Image (cartoon, rainbow, N blue to C red; front, side):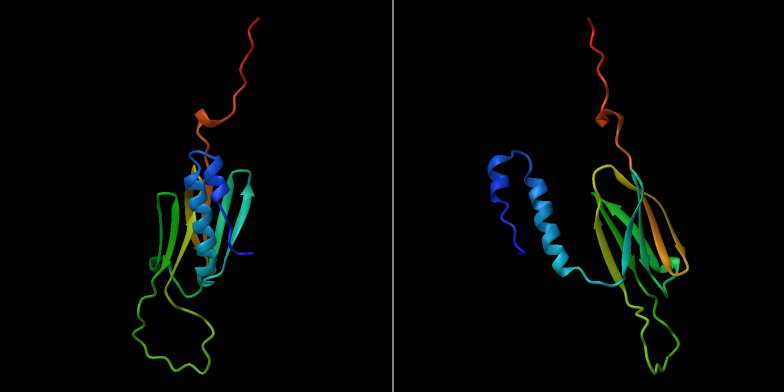
Length: 140
């Protein structure tokens, strides 16, 4: 079952059309999402996450990380190699890529680093004080 009928959500919920649109877009993007480069999404703490992406052959100047409107985009643009290579077998993919991630509300990128051919992008969810639960004292 690949298709979801979201019309009951539109009928009974007011103001959730953005949520239904996001679900629909996520369902469509999973079918079109390329598998290169491979990545992991890790939960480091209650509000801390890490995306680890295999970027062997790329140096930090060839990688670009941007956030805009709740989207994280990681792009790798390989610089053209001036030297001619004669491969007998080429198993290391060094092609350009673009990977997009939808970030939840109040999630921001803290830092990014490249280590041993892996790109680490650390994220944190910071809930504003106004949205945190608080206890109301009852006066008698």
